[in-house]
Image (cartoon, rainbow, N blue to C red):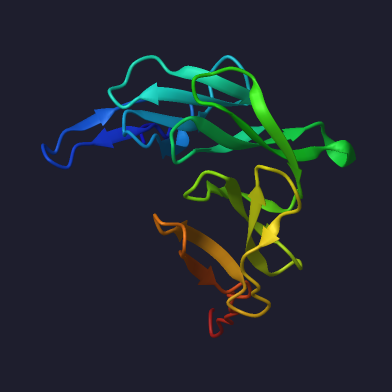
Length: 200
């Protein structure tokens, strides 16, 4: 982070080498490919005001644009072939939120899935077998749960059923075999009111 402009860096744990990978206006939310050779991320450029999804080599170099518009939070599939991200089409009451799946080696989207506007863009992921996307959805206004959307089609499957505090799923991660996942939960109502007195 330099001049309040986030960029992506790589850190070699063996040698301690730190290397800057990007130099955009606001490069964040990276997702690495399975082979460790590339990174997909969301960024902005000086020539427009929309978000872009880029791919860059772990060695650095010129980024390759994969998508742009109202897009965010890309995540690479476990096999490294696809990237999924959130996209909003339209504005206002007619806006539609979608998950978009496209090949990492550029090209048009291969699948678009309409989803509720209340899902959490920050927590889009893949199941370890690559057959479904997972995401966090606000189900009741103050409770979030993890859902799975099979890419083969059909309704989303609710994986967790939390209905009390701690009511917010703030993070989750799958085991490699896909049989379990870990969840971090936080309180939705976690604000205290403090009164100070005696000031003159």
